[in-house]
Length: 220
Length: 220
Image 1 (tube, rainbow over the protein chains, first blue to last red):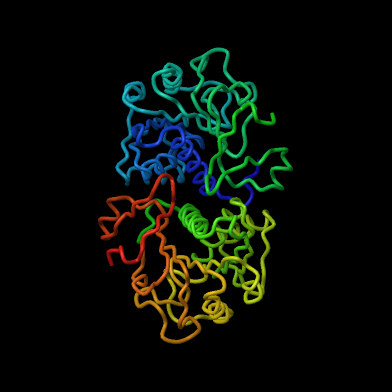
Image 2: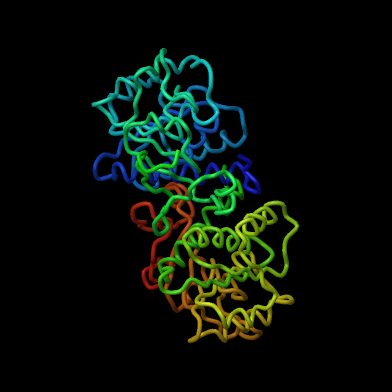
């Protein structure tokens, strides 16, 4: 889908803001402030960087795992914004995952296909193994899932089922296989564009940038 | 104040979002959906363009008055985003002001000084004369007010006192003369930066991007 007149800066700001609001719905700061955010090298990781900044301002204590930092100028600025807030970066994902209240999976999203490259296989395995211990919120897609065909049949993502998913702009086909709490975020889709692409504009409330839409209620 | 690692796209998106949330606090859509937004040629007008898009998505019916449209690429994109949502643009401000439920003054802001140029004198006079008829929310500064010394002693802005003001990032010296409801918005100021500039970070609630801070409670 074309970004039309929007800049990537704008869209990523709104996407990351949506992610931060979904996390807040799942777990307000009073229920646990430590948030571990795994960021991949592309747009999904950028959404995670933006979300971290908003979460900091809401009173959370985010920690970043961002092993493949992009040379892209936008991502560099987003990372700098976090460093200016003294948000820590860790290189030990499995260790950090044992000392957090919630994990955000912002590794791979809409444009993922093919193989999971290093160092992410072990990270995705850790996300899978967090089940029942630490809740995981996935951004746009559970990392390593195929956008069209859903959960992988082998590899580290086999059996990975995050507790929650926030679909950005619109749900992707993979949500058919998703079992958990599901949000839609990115409140900038006009009615005409939605109609053109056969999408529903979900019923957002008030000034909220996200809305919970159970998978069973989606037109897929 | 430096924008640091932030792009203007990002800051304007967050500023306009704050403005839209202040308007929502003042008047939810159930109390009147028609919002007339007067945009100047610079950053203040850009904040108004962003606010209009968010207000549309909240269910309002914004109408734009934007007589001096900037050739700046960012502002052009922001205006295009509104046209893609079929948001109307008017050339008749005084006439439109008689058929609206609320007005947003996004003509001049932080960088204003000197003379009010055409066609804005009549617009500012209409804003002044709206008192008691249609509420006005000013963005960052009541248009034509001096940032340091407040209300002008003559000209069309003499006697202009909007009903509400949303200060972006931090209140400006002119708020000492402001009488009305006062909000602070733009939730991206870190504690260290705030300390450096001697600013208070206001106590935002939840995921809100604005907070009401009565002028009497400000450290000025």
